[in-house]
Image 1: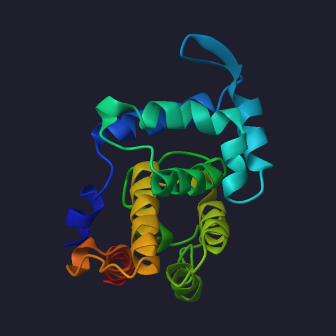
Image 2: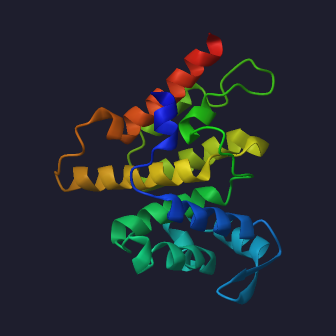
Length: 205
């Protein structure tokens, strides 16, 4: 089941993935191009890092260079308030990621062992705090801490992005007293918990 969850996303598709990874790669170099115009990718990234969390990134050009591609009509991802909120959280977190690593889902990567092979990269206590995040700012700060713990190992950007979009969707539904998906494997917390704890168990075995 865990491998199934690693591969399946619920909101974003492969076209969105290509856009996100291309945007991220351009922010790793000094000279890059968006829409035929030259930019300093490192400068864009530095500006995003200094923004207040998470909505401050919406005031920066680096955010809109991604948003304008991701929310095109042909991408089937509407430029709604919820989607902009989700993208803001993702961008605020992604600029602290050191590398894109697609070897496993984001939650699975948090339960991988540290270099000394003694403990999980993120402890179960901190993981449960992440799951219990209530506000966008709280969720964003805990995600930044998570990707910093991953360090040079990087994270699965696409898995991270889809999870953030799902988290924002579920939070908005709760605020409007709407029912979230009753299928457990389509709930963000369940998907993350399965990937985290099943990976942890398989390593021990």
